[in-house]
Amino acid sequence: MQCLDERTQYLTRRQALRRSGGALIAVSTAGTSSLTVPQLVIAQSNDDAGAERAGNGQRKITSQTVSTIEFRDNAGKETSVAGRVLVRATDGGLLVEDAARRLWTIPASQLKNETVTDQAFQLFDSEQLGRRLVEETRAAGIDTEFHIHTTDNYVIAASTPEACSQWTSQLLERMQIAFQSYWQNRHFELHPLASPLPVLILSNQTQFAKMAEFDRTPASAKGQGYYLVTANRIVLFDLTAQDATSPATTIVEVQRRVEKVPASVATVVHEATHQIAFNRGMHCRYADNPVWLTEGMAMYFETPDLKSRRGWSGIGKVNDARLFRFREFLKARRGTGSIESLIRDNSRFAEADRAIDAYSEAWALSYFLIRTRIRDYSQYLNTIAQKQPLQWDTPEERVAEFRSAFGDDLAKLDRELVSFTSRLK
Ligand SMILES: [Zn+2]
Image (cartoon, rainbow, N blue to C red):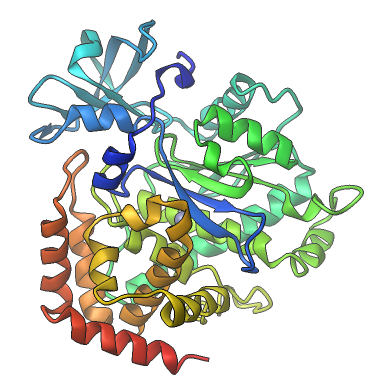
């Protein structure tokens, strides 16, 4: 398999505004924010430009046998990928998924040859996935020792001491159970996982920034974690080692440090929520998922009570940092029609100076709808879950879909939202 960075291209601003959140990368950025949890911005995933060119009007076919596709990458170099064809566009472009679940968009103009085999398509097992993760770090120029930590639902490649990957895997496994039971009780049935989920934990920010660069998501290089939709993997680094002279080497020590760095939990949970939602049938990768919904979902789960021995008692706790920001936005900058501008497209999330407000409003709207309109919200989730890859809605379609779930009167909904959040503590 060729290096992916050679076929990378970014969306133009215009495309980014028009495009959905299906292919976004969720990025937690540290730094100058007054928030105590990571603020979030969006970068585009590396295959978006290809997805854009593949366009609407495709036929979804999901082949179950392996095809070998030869094509020219964006730099004009000949390359190939083996995988199953998920979508065949009417113009001949392809969306292909490889055994590691990486998505490849191949515009018709770059396609050279397709060989369809009768070999059944199979996803990688944990061992193969672990190897792929390490290969990718090598390709990114991270030349250090990795260990592979495998659990029921995850494959973690980590350059940290094992205590860090063990602690993270325990948190991730608890999330799988908690997320499933939360939605099961609220009329949304999650699918079982088709294969283990890949996670990369790097030992420091320097390695993390290198990986972000390789993944063509420069906006996340200064951040704390991201979920790369294209590669389906989470990338994190050991936040508890940042201000310490050496990394923690026991789970007890990791836990002790984590309690002093709230962002370390919020980041894992945020990115893991994206990954679970995209892998268990809540959102479809490369489909038109509204960003307010995907990010609102991740932020809703950011506030676990880790001290609870029974697992996950924090779901539904108010996210103080988001609420604080939303109130400030409300006081100083929020105009009329704000809900509509949030839901009609993703533009408010794509502009750095407006993104933090947009995130806070996405949290507030999601929190409000989940807590007061759960039936409508679950129904809306089910509608969004049906969306197919590479089919983009217009802003008008987005708004109509939202209205059909939550009612036509957005001004009334807005008053209810503001009144609801004013009572939150
Ligand atoms: Zn996110």
